[in-house]
Length: 290
Image (cartoon, rainbow, N blue to C red; front, side):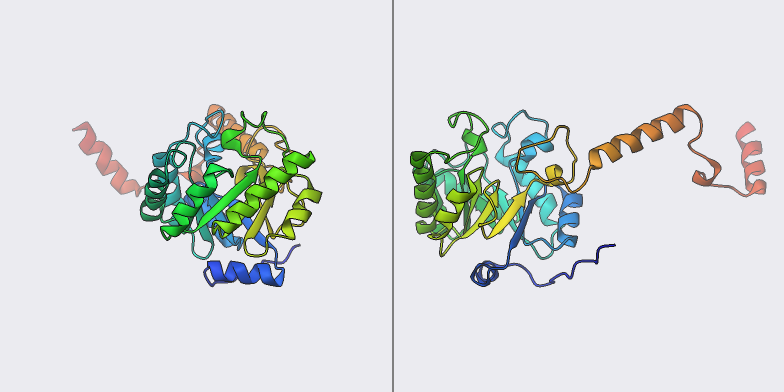
């Protein structure tokens, strides 16, 4: 039997994250998309919670992250916020909500803070997106960057596959990460890049917290999608996913058993019903007939 986690009741702040990085304490990050999942991750004592645009796939039924809107993610984020006590909450900025201009990026970031209660926002990519990140940071909102495999622009990257597997590609990942650090991002996600590349870039990420997903153990912390790690999805998922449960199978089994019981008249049983005093029942029947 595993021991219950010793939970820290102090809120996670940016200075605390920086201290964890300095001390080499691994940082735990996971996604959440509604109040129940927020309560689960909060109770588990995670450090960072991302209201990810992956909600498009695992919650809203889209085929990719591209269609999800700012309004949809704000609604989900507000539900998550109501379920969190200590983790730092980060809201993903969806495709089309920050690319056009600094003004657009700042306005939408402000919406996530004001309407969803986010502590920070996350955006994907380097290049021009570094300027967007810098603009949001300078407006007073903390920003998490994202390099390597960026799902919002996966088509341009040749699909959902590892990045940085040639010297040129690895240099582009490194340049993007360092540029986001220079722009003031408090954290950067490294997704689907070789472990050896992560190790080399980490030597230069001295100010910014690095969270890995499929980027090896050298990063300051790790993130997984809630539904992936708990097995609330069909299929095996990406190479980097480790399943810690198979809740989809349990849910299907439970639902099937319920349907079978209803059809076989096994549910509801007497213990699932309410009683009435016999005298009151007789009075009710007489008055109903009258």
